[in-house]
Length: 207
Image (tube, rainbow, N blue to C red; front, top):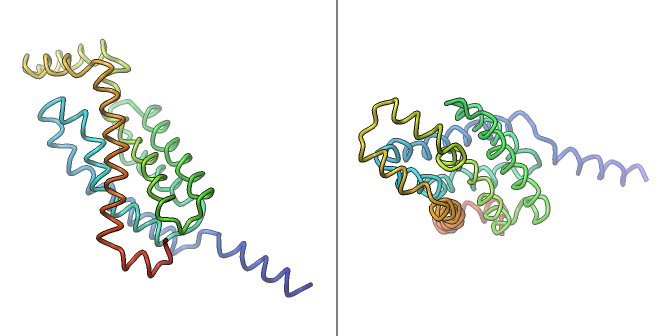
């Protein structure tokens, strides 16, 4: 009886986040932020690139995300990562939107990991698709707050060509393209990460 209870206690403890897990989450979150933000500057050159930015960010951000999933196969890792991303990206007065998308997406991702098993590559890939929706907080104001957004960029003295391009991508069709490309980009990125890091994932017990 005592031996059984000890095994149960040990199993529960193995699912608790420890100091090294928190360090790993912080490192991979910073790496994820760095590689994804590399596409933020080019996205400012044209509104269409801005619309596609979340998808490109998902493609390049898959490797640090999947490495985190391999290193920390425990609950709440993605919630913490989403919270870190919120702190790093909460600029421009859009904090509620950033929190909703990054933390909300991370919450759904956590549920997917729990349901599919923390060592499931397919489950982690699906989780990443929802986590990647957090980057929609960058272009989403174009559709949600169209009037105030257009007024703001006009006051900033943006070129007439840029303003006209914003108007052209402000249709619901481009919102669908933005969401769809983000999901496709995340799944593609997860697949590429699996191909590039196959030995690493096998060593970590991911299947």
